[in-house]
Image (tube, rainbow, N blue to C red):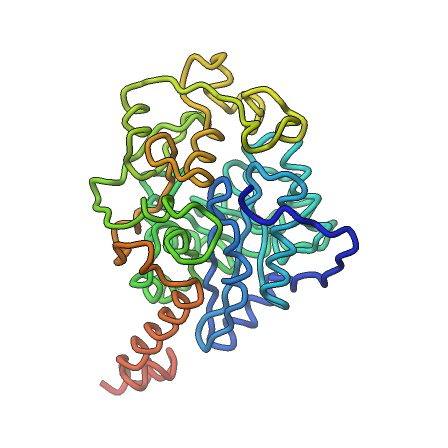
Length: 393
C-alpha cells in the first residue's frame, strides 16, 4: 500500500507547532514568507509534507500539507507521524474536503486534532462545525476561499489564515472564471487575516503575489513532479513535457463541478459521455474494504454529492477508482491525473531528472535572492525608503 500506514501504539511524538495568525505575523515580520505545499488528491502528495516542512530558509518557511481523502485511520496517523519525524518542529497540517462522507470528515478531523497538527485547512464546501472543532481542540483553522465575501465570513467565524485559490488550480475549481491575481487582490482587501495565494503557482509567480500582500504562496503541481513522495513514477511522468493542449477541464462526479486534469484516454472517455461505474477496491483495501465498506462504491462523498452514486451508477464515473488508478498503479490510460495549469511550465522531461523537494525550495530561495538583488537599493530597504525617493524626485 502507498504511504506509511504503520502506527506504533507506544510511539509518542510532540505536537507540531501551531501555525496560527500570530505565528504567521511573526514570520512575515522577520522578512520571510510561507511556501505551502498543497494537499493533493488520493495519495498523490503522500510523503511530501515532512520534507517541505523541514525547510527554514532566509526568505521562505516551508509548510507541508497532508491530504486526508480516502485514508484509513492507520494511514492518516502514519502520514502525520512520518511528517513529525521528518520535520521536528516544522509546520504541517491536514487538508479536509467538506464534500467527503460526513463520517470520514469527522473521523479525519478528530485524528488531526488528537495528533496535534499545525493547522487544518478545509475546502470543497463549507462546514462551520470544523471551525468549532478546531477552536475546541486548539488547532488553527484555515479556510480555502474563492471570493472576498467568503474570506470575510471565515474571518468572522474565527479562521487564523486563508488560502485564496484561483481558477488555475488543479482538481476541482471553485470559480473557473476568477484568475488568481484578481482573486488575491479581492481577498487581501476583504480581510485582515494572512492570505496565501494558490492555484497554478510556480517559481516565476512567487514575487508577484508577495508584492500583492500575500503572506505566502501555495504550490502543489510542482511538488507532484519531484523526486520525493510516494506517488507512482508514471504519475510524475504524466506531468512532464506537457503543453496547454495537454490540460483539460472535465465535469467531475462531485456535484458536476469543473476540474482540471491531464488529458488522457480517461478524460477523452468522459468527454464522450461514457459512464465509468465503480469497481471493487479490495485489491487496495483488502477483504474488509474501506472502513468496513466492502461494496464497489465506498461512499467516499457526502450524501447526494456524487453524480455517479445518485444516478444508481448510470452516469458519470467513480472518482475513487480513477484517482487510485493514477496515484497507486500509475495507470496512464484509466487513471485521472488532476493538475494545475502550471504543469506547462515544468522544465524537466524525464523522471530521473526531477529535483527533490529540498532542491525545489533551495532554487526558490536563490531566485528570490536574485530578484531582491536586482531591485534598487532603496526599494530593498522598504516602502518608506521608496516613498522618500519618489518625494525627492
